[in-house]
Image (cartoon, rainbow, N blue to C red; front, side, top):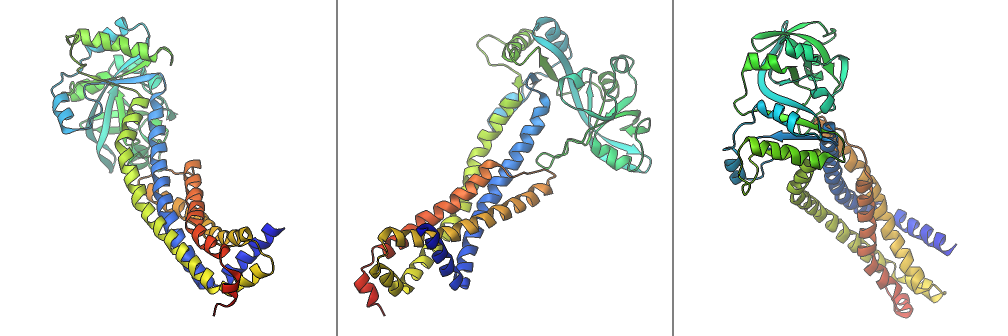
Length: 406
């Protein structure tokens, strides 16, 4: 009962000074909103990257001439590597008994045209028919090309959703003939929409049989990348070791020299990405936290003014039996009401702003436990930390001096 009475008193005190309370609330809202925007945006981008990398599957890994580069020195060293040849596919299939499937991948850029509609610099990929069994790319309509399509160099293609939207708006794309570069291909399937990652559009692609790609574009100067699927998740590490041994033998890499190729998994890519962005995250959150501290200082100043203005009230309450803890709780409740209210509004605004920012690069963001917990923790912490001194000052006030205060 006493606690409820103290809450009512605190609420009434805030309502009696609406302008002051509103300005204080605004400071908290700005601080929490800025932190929430950054946390929500970073979480949203991380989720999008994780979802995109998840298409590789837990038992899949990629072999590339050049993988992740984190410095100019690393780039200068890796650019000297020999390209990965098509012979590597056969050697891995014969030398890795823990590998289920191996698919070569080659890429180029070309314009794609249908009727009066066209797209420039579309990613054109060439792969074997088993690529769809390795990477989680689903067909919305139609099908992926078959082994026979690749064997006979049929000019068929599997297109991304962005290509479908641009070239075939309101038209069924299946069976239509598009021009990829200088060659014509028949559309036999459309992939499900995947969404954007960091402004890039993975739906803007055309995939054709590997044999047709080599015939049109030639063997890629930078070599192939290989998508490899292990027999199971448990065999992933051993399968990677077998592939590493096969490639080192083929490429004549001495035992005391590092690999001249990179093997990547979804987890390894995500770990490197997180390590690169960690300092960036801390910096952004740190800058935004400055506004939170400023909001906290505003709360403490306002509470100090409130304590001074209500000195006689404090003296009267203490003279009729109010205890120190009751006065302490009353002013802490006032501080917490302000900061928690501002925190809740800041969480909502931060999420909405983050959604708008992420929406500009076509990603989705949803409220995460980390973001909500951070917002509530920050607002509660501000109320406790910056409200404790004014509350203690009120609780420790001498009732005789308080009653004689003018």
